[in-house]
Image (cartoon, rainbow over all chains, first blue to last red; front, side, top):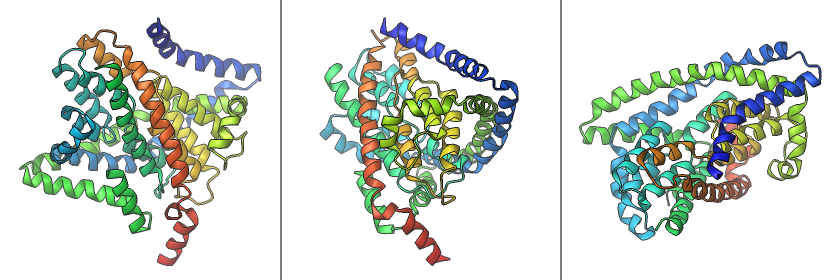
Length: 178
Length: 223
């Protein structure tokens, strides 16, 4: 039931938004076609503007991943994991999550497939991936689009959000799935 | 632990250099660790691959950007965005005290956050960029992030999500019983992380190390 509602919400959201925007605009007698083209002109410029920021971040992240640094970091952090009851298999996922979206989805899939069905580790991996974000990518794209390079406290706040997402996932999964 | 380290580090450096150091750290440690692991070739080719991938990503975004910016222009001219801004005024004035309550930036941010909540990744990024542009129009110091931008990004990276699509798809494919349970657990975790994000962003923005004035003064001194 809930699943159906949510699935439909996801599918119908975009048509709903489009219809609302267009009907409201024609109600207000806006020249929709002209406005659309006027706004769309900017699309190319924005796409090109974010390229240097995106190259900088993706290159650094790509190199870091390829070097095996994540495995190294995992082995260093492993002893502290027992303290908080986090499964060791999920540590690389937690580290990679703020860095790479495709990388973390692949890793999550691999963890869920290799762990027994309905296991705590699988649920935790899925919950954690869902409740954290590719912080570095978002920062690069969003700040890049407006040419902001002095990011002040945004990086720390974003990473704090990710870390708390991981801990909150751990807590709720312990409660629900063990 | 890592975060505490980062904060201490930031305070010690005092200047706006964190992203510089993180970037440097990623690349240098990649080369050193890669050399130790005998993966130096992979590291180099990852650099070139990623550079290419970044451009493909940005170019791929152009069509979507154009589409959503066009739609948003219509919504803006019809005052729909202002209407949305007014609807969320009670929350917006608390979260973004620096933004005039009827400003279109609020409406754009609402659109982006709603798209994120519904898991509409394709729409979320262009709408988020639009929101950043609206926020930039209120920015007095080019190139420096405003409080509102940092708050918006903190909320964004805390990933408010009603539908964690990727997790759902994978759990279902592997054959978990009731994969939709992940919606509940994610909602809980994401709510907590959003609260943490908002609280920490509000505390951090008051720290003298992050103040815009100080940053600009430092820059003037350096020049």
